[in-house]
Length: 377
Image 1 (tube, rainbow, N blue to C red):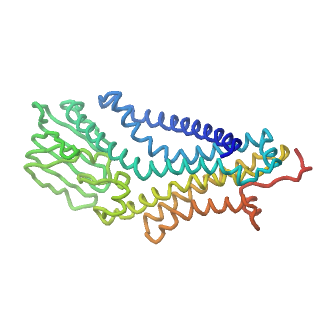
Image 2: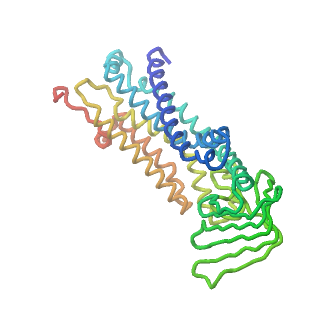
Image 3: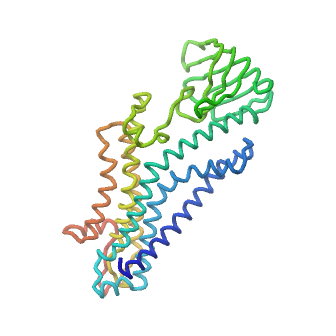
């Protein structure tokens, strides 16, 4: 890059990094406040607290990074335009493509970051988070729950034991009402937490399971000598089973492995294509920002309307992306929508920025309408 292109890149990179750090800090604080009960109610250390909240950062950054890039492009172009630097560059023979080059480099960097996070880092962080929460829940059952008290371990899970005898719990009662259509009640004389292959279980001995279905004939009771209650499923999607959510599976597993239940094939499909299409959104967002205010203007040509309309455009684009993901969950035939939404926004912005025939219609929609040179200030 030339000296002036490096100058533009430095401004945009600094703005993008500052915006990303600021937004990530704000979102992390809101997440940390929500998870602070790990320390206050569940007796965990601050190290565990920061580990749990930190493992959620990759997923947050994948959403925040395209927005940070969009803000950085708008900020840089507004600064260059407000100081009339774009006008000087254009007068010196620096065309729009050369102005766009440093933004393109930054966009590639952000897209690669998002691709790395979504395809590799994010699944690993969710797997680590699940294993850590499983151990925390085992600690809660073994060390935090008080004798003779009914404790809510998770939404819909009530736990009680009569007394503790060494590592074992005596007189165990568990009520599981997470499924509004079904209530499960576990009663056992004895139980003990064990960990196998990174999974935590509460092994119940000499008890029974009572299952009551809403609208059914009556409760069904099954006695058992030993029953392994999966602690890692607290808050999960399938109670009592070893189920790995799509977001916790590696990208290779989503590509090659069959879901454990055909009913969840849509979730696996939507997760896979969300990950692959995620790096396209930084490109689309940057292109929309450049198409909106990247044209050389005088100080008499306002940028406020164009900036506001560009914000509306990226919000609409992201909403369409979420809608496409929901549709893909229901039908495999709609998979191309995951890519058509960001690519469509990208191509429309390129078309408008290039001044192609008919592009004035697109520019009018996103607010890029230069007033006449002699128009009102």
